[in-house]
Structure formats: C-alpha cells, structure tokens
Image (cartoon, rainbow over the protein chains, first blue to last red):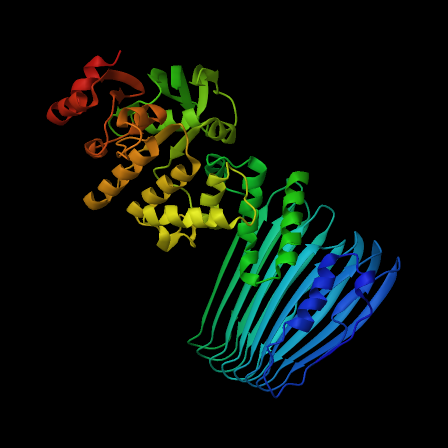
Length: 300
Length: 261
C-alpha cells in the first residue's frame, strides 16, 4: 500500500486528520496477495480562492481486504475542490472506504466517483460531512459487475446554515446475486440538504434497499429526499424508505423525566438518529463528531 | 411530600381534570383507582410537567415547593420520578446508557467502570440483562417494558414515585417480581440484618408513591396507605384502598358516579 499526500500532521488544523493517518497506517488487516495504490488520501487546501484538482485511483486486488480512512479539509475559507475518484474492487476483495469532509465556509466541493465491483467483491463507503462548506455536490456510482458483488453506502450529513449539501449514491446491480444498501441520515440545522439515492436493478433476482431519513431542526432549513428505484428485469426486490421529520417531543420529555437537560436529551436523540455507532469510527473522531452535534444544537 | 391543590388540567383545550386535590405524605403509598378515561394518567403526566397537559388552575407542590411550572428535568432532580405505561422507543440510545445516566443524576457519565458494574448488577436483579444493549424500549414485551421502567427508577432513586399501571399487560409471575421491585424502590418490606430494627429501617427510608391501578392486582404485593377513586376528572371517593377496591369489584364504578359533584 502506498500513501502519499500533500499535507502533514503539523499543517492539519483538524485533529481528526492526524487520527486518520494513524488509522490508515495501523489498521492493517491485509491478506496476501494484495497490491493497492492510494493517491492523496488526505487533502488539505491552504490558499484562499485556490482550485484543487485531484485524481484518486484505488485498486483492491483479488482477495485483498483494505480499509481506507480519508479526510478532506481546508485551512482557507474559500476555494474549489474537484476530485475524481476511481475504485476497482477485484474478485473477492473488500474495500472499506471512510471519508470525512470538513470544509471552510466558502469552499465548493465537487467530487466525482465511480466504483466497479467484480465477482464476490464488497465495497463499503462510510461518508461523514461535518462541515459542508458553501456547497458540496456528489453522486458516486457503483457498478456491481460480478456475480454476488455487494455495495453499501452509509452517509451522515449535517447541514449548517448557508450551505448546500447535495449528496446521493447510485448503485447499478448488473449481475446475478448482487446486493446493495444505500442509507443516508441527514440533519439540517438551517442548511439545504438534497439526499438522493438511486438503485438500478438490471438482472433478475437482485436485492437492494434505499433509505433517506432526515431531521429538520431549523425553520430555515430544507431537506429534499429523492429515493429512486429503477427495475429493468423481472423477479427483483428493491425497496426504499424516506422520511423527513422533527425530533419527537415525547422522546425528549421521556429523557428529561430521567433527569437529562433538554439540550442533552436532544443531542442524544440526534446522535442516535445519525447512527454513527455503526460506522465504527475511531473514538477520537467520534468524539469530534459528538461535539459538533452538541454545539450545533446549542446554536440552533 | 407531594401535594396537589385544586388542579385543573386541559388537553388540547378540553378540561380533563376539574380541580383535583390530594396529598401524599412522606413515606406513604397512595393508590389511584378509576375507570379508563377518568383522568388518572392525566394527573400523573401533569404532575411530572409533560407538555400537552396544560395546568390552567391550581398547584403541584413537592416538599412544600411549588413545582407547577418548572421543567421536567428539574422536577426529576428535585426527587420526582415516573414510570411510563407505554414508554417511547428512542433509536440509537441503548438501555444501559440511560440507566447509567439515571444513576449519574441525569448527567452523561464518563468512562466510569464501577458505574458500568452497578448498571449490570441492577439489570441482573431486574431481569433486564437481555435487552441492556438494545435500543431503548425497542421490541420489548409488556413485562420487559415495566421492568425496564422500574430499573431506570431504581437507578434514579426518586423520593416521590409516580407509577402508571405497573401491572398492565404483565402475567402473574411477573407481577410478583414487579411488586418486589416496587417495594425495593419505596424501601418497603425491609429485611432484618441484625443491626437496625425494622422500624428504624422503615423510618430511615421514606419514599412515597402515587400508583395508578386499574385492576388493583398490584395492591396484593404492596401495602398502600390510602386510595382514591377518580371519575370523569373528579375524585369521587377516598379512603382505605382495599375497601374501595372491594366495593368497586362488587358494584362497579357506576355506583361511584353518584358521588361526583
């Protein structure tokens, strides 16, 4: 495995980023034969108004098992980040890709990502957007080309005031026995969030599920959930579930009756809703995320 | 301990309670009887301060302090605790986390291992171990729900307990367990340990309770000091709870209608 990047720990304003490096280097659970190349996993923009253009290629060779934790952030408040990523998951390989975004206020982010999964391969994407910048738009697509290939996308999105988060995941189920699961949890604290999702079943017998759930916690926020299912063959099973709502008062008051303050109760419920537990993040990163949720609640 | 004075409560603009007054002194257990829809739960929910239960007149006092308009968590911290009849499912929060929070006076505890141990011991006692790691109230049976509520209350250790039909939806075997847990919660039926007399023990641990019971089954496991019959948002009758229950069993609540002013 090769890791290169244009940042180092001392340049990173976010403690999270150094955590990520530690994770990448210590996570190892690699099985031979493995040959993976990973370019610029940690991206740092330092100059105002700059344009950062990157191209990532990740190849998980046959039977390999790779975890990649990557973070993108900026020291500058403005700029544009354009990222193209290609992921190749070869036969029987597993690629678990975790990405954390935390951008400056005026940064626009437009990543483009495609994933090809071969026979028996598994692609897992866990994406967390803590500070979306001014605008972030991405709609990665996974092509499950080999029989029994699997893709799973989990996204946790927090929309702060003045931001636009337009994020979704597409999965094309193109071979026998392929499976997909796309789950997004969004919380708007005043920002605009578009949560997309698209499943395309191209052959019989495939199974897939799509879930877009949002909590709207601020009167100026907006959440648009667009779950799409496209069946192109008989005998397939694709489902979706979408919801936009508020925090249930009964739940808050239930926790308050046990002595919790209203703020703590709301934070606990929002954290539970975001379901960050399942992502298996390093403790420090989880703590950072918890802090953002708590702080944001106070602000709203 | 708890005093309710001429309490009028509205739900969605409709008056449900029309001037309820009662007092539960230190260390006493009082039972609220009454048919469905008579306002028993409304009284408990209003006393705890839940939104949607608007107090339009009257007061709720805890240890002489007016708590009618303070937030729910402040009431909890002042020593008022409630067991819900149908607690809501809270996604993403594990039962054991809330029990630890109850033990820690409503605050989120740090990495305290001794507390984790205490939570496990309590869960073992309350037969709640199997769902300690589950999301709060998710997929619980009737009996499990009640045990979970009582476990949380035992961790919270309130001085004044409000119980809403602790026996509803619970089989006979489980009612005995619940009865035992409620007695433990209230410091009743203490067992001798050689040092202090049982009388001393009783005096030391003065917990009070107001318990709603529809069937009265729970009163077989728990001594109660006073009973009330609620009808249509009024207290129609009060007295010895066993006697009241006996009369209701024999003649039904319809006889109590005569006593509603």
